[in-house]
Image 1 (tube, rainbow, N blue to C red):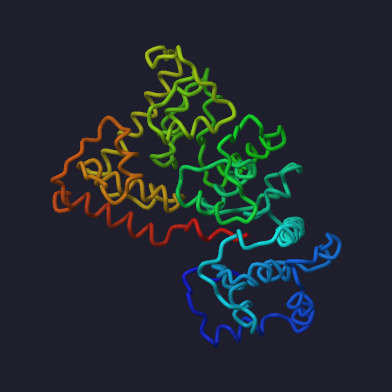
Image 2 (cartoon, rainbow, N blue to C red):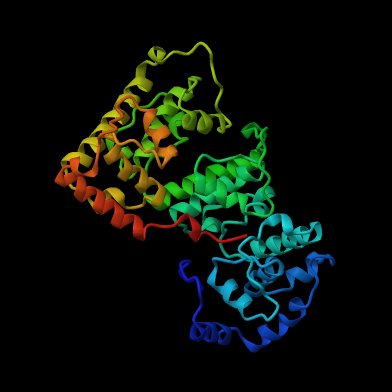
Length: 385
């Protein structure tokens, strides 16, 4: 059972109800683990495999809880708060874990992943040597799809552009960022699993295209209808992917980092944008025209829920900030947005800008997107590990 991650202090009534919801037999079976020294005693995979799935989650919580980790997951948090030995420590970090604890956590995570009916964030190390299927992947939020896909790359030390995504992996006990990450070192099975996740995500979002698909359209034309459902950020990636597949080298840091992380990308010193021709050129023009329509609509027409549907909070935030950027807002307190918008030729900084300069339609669209963001899937709703 999941509870809102915003609860910071559990009421005693809720605490009692949650504890009563745990069967007496399960509470008794957890007694051994409450006194087990995970820091010095190594678990065996067989004994961990014998633990029921609902208890494995709490078992993982105990290992971290011995060091005071504060969980967002309400079930783990409530369980730990009921233990007389638990002392919440806001300064917890994974460096506090011993090597034995890390190995024990690995065994617990392997057992959890093997028992999940469908794949969950945190499971991809288990699936590193196993082929995924669409049925096994199940249904996920936009943030969870991104975490699942990124987890395959994070296993090899990839660093991520999105601040929240990088922080998510920085908080995983097993993650080690690598300056020498090379996407070409992903195994053939990992690449197939990435493709399976991408296809399942597209199907769940009911979109025809997604970044990474332009290889399929080197000799085919795309239609505007095929772009329905994509965010502005995705459209920009898709458009630039056409150039990237010819080896274009990008000046914008966020684009450069994104494409260098793709296994298929081969930078070329000789390619020039004007070399683009044929159906590739027409496809870029189609995407640009579609983007321009969305840009124009942000200022001219009220945004509909249909346009926002399926976006998670980071995409919606970029769309909202673009309304301000089109008026020249300087993002002094948000340097990432400043760098992001400066990479587009239409952006003209206006230090004199203030919110009063927005039109009524623009103000209404800002309010609509802001309301959507409050209900959008949070990146932190993913399972903790």
